[in-house]
Every structure is written in C-alpha cells, then in structure tokens.
Amino acid sequence: MSIKKRLIPALVGATLAMSATGASAVSFNGVYIFGDSLSDAGYFRPFLSAIGLPASTVAGLGRFTTNPGPVWSEIIAQYYGGNANPSNAGGGIYAQGGARVAVDSASTPPVAATQRPVSTQITEYLNANSGRANANSLYGVWAGANDIFQNFAGIVGGTVNPATFIPALATTEIQQIGRLSAAGAKYILVFNLPNLGATPQFSVASIGAAGSGAATQLAANFNLSLFVGLQQSGIRVIPVDTFSLFNDVIANAAAFGFTNTTSPACLAFPPFSSSPNSQFCGPTNLAAANAASTFVFADGVHPTSAAHAITADFVKSLIDGPNAYSMMAEVPLSSRAAHIRTLDEGLYQGQSAAIGKISVFAAAEGSNFDISQTAFGPRTDTKNKAVTVGVTMRASDALTVGVAAGNTQGDARQGVGQFDINENALSLFGSARSGPWYANFMGSFADVKYEDIRRSVKLGNVTRVATANTEGSNVSGSLTGGYDHEWGRLTVGPFASITSQLVTVNEFTEAGAGSANLKIFEQTRRSRVYSGGLRASMKFGAWTPFARVSFDKENFKTPRVVTANPLTVTSGNSYDIPAYFGDTSWVTGSVGVRGKLADRVGLSVVYSAVSSKSNEKQDGVTASVSFDF
Image (cartoon, rainbow, N blue to C red; front, side, top):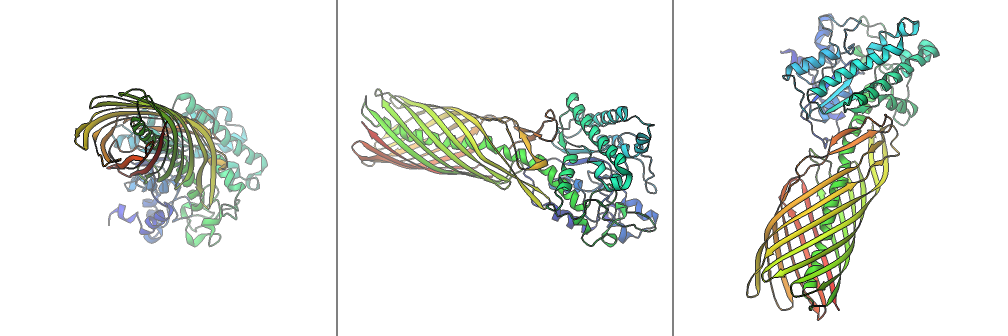
C-alpha cells in the first residue's frame, strides 16, 4: 500500500465533511498554507511509525490538536476547494510543527523529518509551480510563535533584546509574505499571534505574573509590527486577528461551549510523551470524554479541535462576509429596471393623448430578483416593489416628454444575512418619432438607503449578528431606437438600446459581531447593457396586446472586488475579496396589454422575465393607470 493511501484514513475525511458545513460562495483555484504546528495537517504522520507506533494508532494522530479532529487549515482548504492533505501527502498544507519563520527550529523533529521553516515551505511551493503563485488561489501564513518560544528565556533573562528581536522577526515574516505576493498571490491570509500569556504554558499559574505578562506583550508587539510593516510595505493581505478572537472566546467561554480555558485537554502518552502533547493526543488520552469540545487548549499552547473550528469560522467570515455584501451593489440594478418599466408604460400612455395635452399616470410593479449560490456569491432572494407617479405631455405629433418620481423598496434575504433597499428616484424621459422611426430616452437619479443590514457570523456554537446602515446612489440613462412596420392591425419592428447605470454603496461599519466586526469600504457597480430585439403589437378595438424580446449583453466585464478591514486591526490593513459576477449575456421578454378603460383613462398590464442567465431568476408584473387632461 502506498504511503499516501496509508496517511489518509477514512475517519479524517468524515470529520472534515462534518466540519465544513455547506459550500462556500467564493471559489479559489487551490488553497496553500504555510506555517507551524497551528496549521500542520499531519506532516509528521509518516514518521510516527518509525518511532514504534502501530499503523492503526498513527492513522488517528499527527495533528497538534485533539486528534482526529481537523485543524483550521484542513477545514478551510476543503471549504474553499483546496486539497486538505499535508504537502508530503499530495496536499496544499505545507505547514510543519516546530517551524520557525526563516531558520531551523531548535527542537528536534521526529526521526527522518527534515527542518522546514516557512521560508523553505514557500520555496517548495514556488519550485513546484515554476516560481509563480496562482492569483486566484487562497494562501495562508501563520508563524512566529516558535521563534518567540525559543527565545523566550533569553528575553526574560535579558540576553535577548525584545525591542530589536520582535521587529526583526516581523520583518522576516513580511519578507516571506512578500515572496508570495511578488510571485502573483492576491489573497493571502496572514495570522497574527494569539495572546500567548493566556495559554496554559505561559499563564500566571505556570510562570508567574511577570512571565505571563511578558508573553502577552511579546505577542502584542509582534502583531503590531507585523500588520504595520505589511501596510508600510504595500502588501495587501487578509489580516486574521487571532489575538482578539481568542481573547473573545476566553472571555465568553460559556457561550462558546467551553468549560475549561486554563488547562490541557490532553493527557500524557507514555512512553512517547510524559506530559500533555497534542501530537500524540487522541480520544483515549483526554482529560475528560468531551474535552475536545469543552476545553480551549489541547496542550500548553495548541487549540483543541473545537477551538480550531472557531478559527476556521472566523476565517470564513473574513471572506464570505465582504462577498455577500457585494450584492448590495447588484440588487439596485434590478430595482432600477423595475422603475424603468413603470416609466415605459407611462410614456406609452402619454403618446396616446391629444397633441398639447397633459397626462398623469401612476404605475406599480412587483418583481423578484433571485440569485442561487454560485462560485461568485451567496444565495440572494430579493423582492422589489416599485411605485411611480408622473406627468407626460404630448408636445407635438413627434414629441412626448415626461417627468416622474418613483420609490422602489427591495427586501434582499441571504443565507448569511439580509439588507433592505429604499430608493427614491427622479426621472426625465421622452420619445421622438418620425414616421415609423422612433427614439426613446430616459435619465434617472436616485438616492438609495440601505437599511437593516444584517450579517450572521457563526463562530463555533455562537452565532452573532453584525448590523449596519448606509446610503448610496444610482444614476442611470437609457436610449432606445427602433422601427415599427405596420401591416393593418399588426405592428412589428426591430429595436436597439443601451442602458447605463452607476451604483454607489457608501462605506459602513458593522456592530454586534465582536471580534468579527468589519468595516466595508465604498463599492461601485458600473453597468452598460447593449440590447437588440423585436417588438410586436396588434390592435383589437380599444386594446392592444403586445410582446417584446431582447438579447442583452453586459459591456462591463471586469470582475469587481469588495474592500474590507477588521475593526480590531489597524485601519491601513484593508483587503479585497472577489464580488459577485453574473452572466454577461441573457434574454429579456415581456408580454402585456394596454388600452383605454374610458375616453381619457388608460390601463396597461405587463409581465416581464429574464431567461438564459445562469443562477439568476428575474420576473415581475407592472400595472399602470393614466388620465388625460
């Protein structure tokens, strides 16, 4: 049996499947993680047999946690479409227990295991990929703890100066992150260090108040140097603030399901370890039967599988949250389309008035804009309600002009949250005809209020709701030209149009999600749709049934991003996450009837729908009433 087959027990696959609930709305071309034992998915497992452990035991050990539970890197790799195996088993997780940033560890690895600091791990990845990092892959770097651990005695004893050691360590890690960035990586998770003074190994009970305080301060100083240094270097990363996260978890332990935050969940594993050692920790040597889920720490410094699951959820929130918010710039495109359809009916009815006469109209539309979960965004179901009142004047046989005010309300519901839209629009529109030729124009400006913004943030057993409100705008214009050919009662003709929109969503800051709160920066969505199609109508006395079909193509095809910044991290450490990106070609059809209820009273009813657009469903009904003065 091959080494690879021996290293991937079925139990691991089952555990990972349970840990990754659902599929991500963001898809990456691979996931690659570099670091130390906090991210190690079992790099040492092939070497455990060499020290006398039976194969059945080896299969369930190897991670630095409460085995066989997965570590965060495995959960994230599977969730975002990567290979969750360690790199020496064909996977994308290069992390190795004991690894330092750029020098060999002072600790001795298991038999036959080579030293692989993060610098070497990144070199291995780049060498395997011709020196390039795929721009559409997700990367992660979590390191620095072992460098501090192995210099801690010197720092406390005064032989190592932390004022020079810590900035130098941060600079070394920044250089390694810079290698990934320079090779093409765009999405790099960079973890700071958790509060080392809160771990069992460095707690007040273990090393005293002075030592524990020093451990906390070293982690805090390293974190500041790391994120400020990245900002000054111009390297964009996704900052993962585990310092704030674990402080949050420990402060609210009961809510997260933890009953013990101060002692290890693991017992010794003689003869290979005489004290708690998470690498040799499994279900048979736990301090309590449920310790994997009720203890925060597996040993002196490593998290249990439950704490790793929270870490993975935290990472997901940093990526999936901004991606979900990209829908805030997408939904107004559909609400504006609803408003435009109400204007269309007001214009048609105004054209039937006597020359020099004024008509007033009121129109309403109910429509749906639903997007299923894709590799570009979460499931979003939106219900729009549009109301428009306006005035038209048939200035001459050739020209009809109008002005209208409209309100559109949209309720967008997502698996991860919701937001409501309240849009007030002012529009100018008109139509010019010359024989069978015609040209229609419309221009609208709207202020948009985003209300009751909610994002559900799952962190293990806890689900928090981040809330916010913000505003925005939508400026649009459309021009349609066509030719109507009449055959008795039947009118048929081609048309072509261009519709442009610019949606702006102002920046906003979340509240209510604790360590997971984000600042979301201003985003814009530009759209320019070219359409061509055919319309037809037939008169039956006072009523005219009609139909229209168009083939539509979006001209703006450059993918967008949403920019965010964790509130617990310095404001200059913003990062970009891919936004929703839908199909660029589709078909729009509508059928309806318009006519006169009385001499000066008009009525129209129209059903419209979009088809041939993957993962999207749009349809709506518009009704309009007009009165000629």
